[in-house]
Image: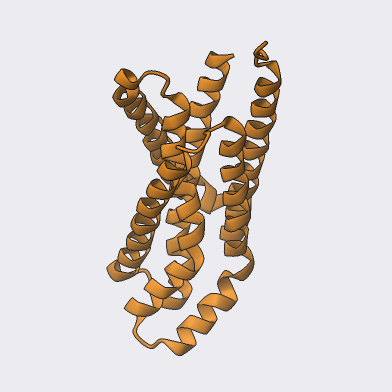
Amino acid sequence: MTLKKNNLVYFLAFCSGFCIMGIELLGGRILAPFFGSSVHIWGSIITVFMLSLSLGYLLGGKLSTKNASLTKYGFIFLIASISVIPISLFSQPIMTFIFTHIEDSRYGSLLASMALFFIPTVILGMISPYSVRLQVTESNKSGQVAGGLYFVSTLGSALGTIITSFYFVLAFDVNTIITAFAITLGLLGIIAISIGTHLKREEPVDA
């Protein structure tokens, strides 16, 4: 059962990395019609994602110290899924409002990036440290476990970047891709919760 759980956590970490970078890449496409695609637009997007992920790492690390479980891990994915959906539903009115009220595209793009991506990216950032906590069973192997998980997650990010930019954006519109990412995260959360609940039932009961 431990092997099954470990493989699942690695798979989920990979998928979360894929989705994070896919969404970040699409951020440029979402902002471009209003603010352009110059270097300071990408600077705004990258800044927001880095700040959000750093806060997510901090919160995920704290959350993982409180009876970490695969079920709670799955709920992070579910909440992330819900938080991503508004990007596809409300990006246009949010962009329009900010564009008409802030003349400087630098600050407009920064605020727009915050409004759209801050919360979902914070939640997605919680996944990595929580993944490490679920995998660490021996303190002397914590570095090895963390390295393996960040390798898998970063590999997912690389593939998410290239597949989204090379294929997804050519075949689908941005909102469809964002919705697909949200659905994927939700399904992954349900899988983690289901397996976590199943494994919990199979744990031996102390006499």
